[in-house]
Every structure is written in C-alpha cells, then in structure tokens.
Image 1 (cartoon, rainbow over the protein chains, first blue to last red):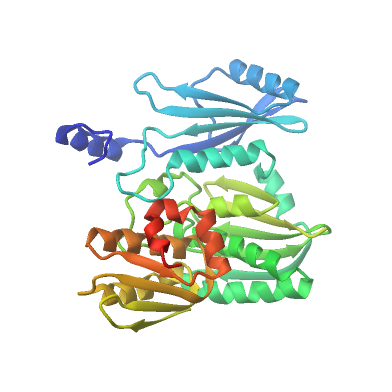
Image 2: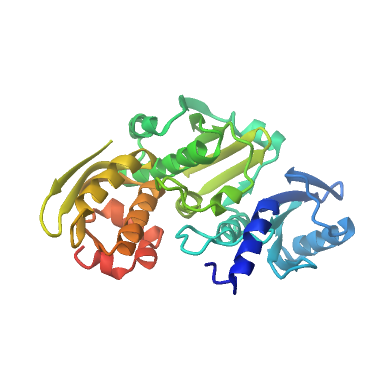
Length: 272
Length: 104
C-alpha cells in the first residue's frame, strides 16, 4: 500500500484519481527583454498565474542575475509544484514543473518525478542544459560537419551503434576515457528514444569547431514525463529515470527541445 | 550482446560477459532466475562486463529486489571500473543495500 494512503478506501480512491489525473508536465516559456513579451518554448504555458506577475519576476531575476525558484500550491491539494526563473543573456527562461499529484509508487525503485524535473530545472539554472525553441533547434541541429548518421529502431541495434560511434570518435582523436563516457551518454539518449520516443529515431554525430555534437531525434509525442510514474514493467525494461541524470552529470552542454512532433537532445562534448 | 554462464552449487554464480543495456533484459533475467531456482543465494559476476548503462543497471536492481522478496539474496562480485562508476553515479547501493556488494 502506498504509505500516503491510510485505508484501503483511500488506496482505491487514489487509483481512481490516477486514471483521471492529467499527466505531470514541464512547461517552459521565455520572457524576451527586448520586446518585453512572453512566448511558449515547451508546451502551452498556462499555469494560472497572471502574465504581469510572471514578467515582474522574470525582470527581477534578470536584474539580480540570479536563479529564482518558487513553490506553487494548488487550491485543492498540497502537492508542491515548482516555478523557476532562470536569467539568460537577453531573456529569462521560466520553467513550470507540475506534478499534478503524481507520486512514486510504493516499492518503485525508480527516481521520483520531482527528482527528475528538479534536476532538469537545476541544469537549466547552471547553464548546462539549454531549452531550445523550434527556431534555435533548426539552427543548432545543422551546425558542423556530419561524421555519422544512422537510424535506430530497436534495442538490438544499440551495441552496433555504440561500436560504430566509438570508432568515429577514436578517429577524431577523442581520448579513451572521455570516449567511454560520451558513448555511454549517447547510449542513454538512444535508449530513452526507444523507450519513450515512439520506438525509434535518428542519431547524427557532428564535428563543430570546439566540440563534438550528437543530435538524437525521436518520433514520439514529446515529453510528458508521466511514463516514468507507471509501475515497473514485468520484464524489467522500464526506465529508471536515470538516463537523463547520467547525461546531465557527465556532459559539458546539453540542448533539449520537446513538442508534439517529438523530442530532440543535443549532446555536446567539448574538445578544446 | 550479453553472454551468461552459470557455475552450479548451493549459491550458484552467474558469470556475465559483454554488454548490459536495454537489449539484455531477457537473457539476464532468464539466467539469474534459472540459477536462483532452489538456490540459497545467487552470485552475479560482472568481471567480464565491458559496458553497462542505466537500463542494464535497472534490470540488475529489479533482479536483486525481486529475488530478495522470494528469499534468495543476490550478491555482486568483480565489478570492473566502468560498472562501478555507473553504479556509483546511480547510487545503486542505496537502492539494493550494501549487503549486495559485500563480496565485491
């Protein structure tokens, strides 16, 4: 029984609630300093807070040049959602993390949704993770010279993909230890693509002046994060929610775009 | 590709060789559960594992928790640096307990 539920009736009501509960979400919008406007970057940004209040906090974060985070409690329950303001050069990213009451199932060893989304917000705050708009993605995904491109549609192809990528990285001169970590990160992104991204997608390894970049593009419906909260699959293949942690802990720079036409990750390994 | 071989006994050892990723779930679970049938404990030998990621780690964690609930403790031994590094990053000890690594 979930420790948060005191009686069987509570547990039963919670299960009914789960069926009706909207998915947990990460929404991102951007306050643009020059035009003094807000625009949605991930999802339709509507969190029930007046636009003028959002702008005021964004301006304050930019003035202080500090990351600002708030806990937001909804009227009917005490689930604490998060609202983060991250000042950038010329704009302020506003991240809304909404759990919608989803909690880790009892006995589930995977990371909680709050942990995953907080990691994302923290990575944006320390400039390791960059949330990309559609326009930025179109520019960034085409930078540099293509070293390798391949489709990946099932897990059986992962080992061969790693071997091929490792050979290209070795030819590029990347040291063995760095190569091992970078290949691990690419494999994590590819596994997430297979698990959550519509079952497949495309890897593109590129050489830029100062870095290697791997663009991992899936064909899924975009991140809604709720699949992390399902009970573990019987075959043990459910994601632990740790792939993104490995990526963010290991790489110098990561880009993320997610929308209805899929999710794209840019994995950058600096080489200078 | 993951290869498994089992040394029988009251506490059989499942030797892993190759790569533990999303693709290895069936062979890893199949080998360890077969070894656990009627056993007092199971040892998983990682000595010849060349690669592991969070999916492979997740499968191992599930195995440990599932078999423990059936009264069959699992221990891990001969962890190569690359396996140890991923386990440390993912705090696997906190998930399965120090006793799993008592012989590592």
